[in-house]
Amino acid sequence: MSSNDSLARLADVIESRKPANGGDPDKSYVSRLLHKGPDAFLKKIGEEATEVVMAAKDVDHGADKSKLVYEVADLWFHSMVALAHYGLTPADVLTELERREGTSGIEEKALRKVVARTAEEGAP
Ligand SMILES: N=c1c2ncn([C@@H]3O[C@H](COP(=O)(O)OP(=O)(O)OP(=O)(O)O)[C@@H](O)[C@H]3O)c2ncn1[C@@H]1O[C@H](COP(=O)(O)O)[C@@H](O)[C@H]1O
Image 1 (tube, rainbow, N blue to C red):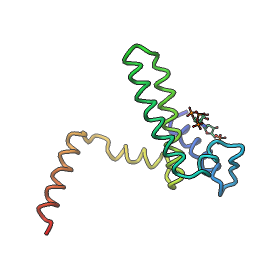
Image 2: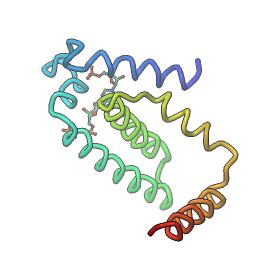
Image 3: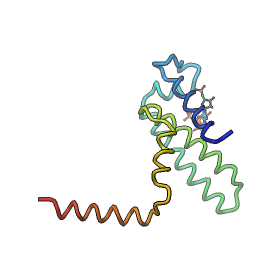
Image 4: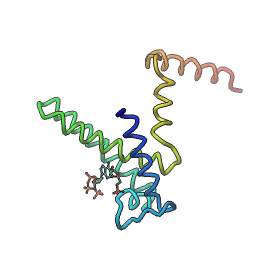
């Protein structure tokens, strides 16, 4: 089973939990988050990102790596709730990563600077 399959399966479950699809905020954590609206799940994303940073620093100081995996899973999960709210799927993110495949970050950043400079020079 590929990891793409698990992401796609989870995305389907999240979709089914939307209040418009019959999700019940009393029974489902995802429905509750979606029902509360963007502020609720965006706050969770901020918290989970911080927890990822803290778990990584703990690994630097000798802690077990499993806590880092756990926190990244929380971050991915809450990000997927946000994607669903905005009508996007993990496939959209994977497509973007595939588009970037083989382009060095250094090269991409240099290109962005050239584009910005050209735009500035062309500006009235
Ligand atoms: N992957 C997850 C998942 N990861 C984390 N969580 C929940 O995310 C919540 C927030 O995590 P925290 O560590 O911040 O816990 P907390 O302090 O209780 O959080 P809050 O009080 O701030 O909400 C916890 O209640 C976790 O159980 C998840 N809840 C659901 N899923 C998946 O979503 C599916 C649908 O879930 P329901 O909509 O609840 O049926 C499930 O079958 C799972 O596959």
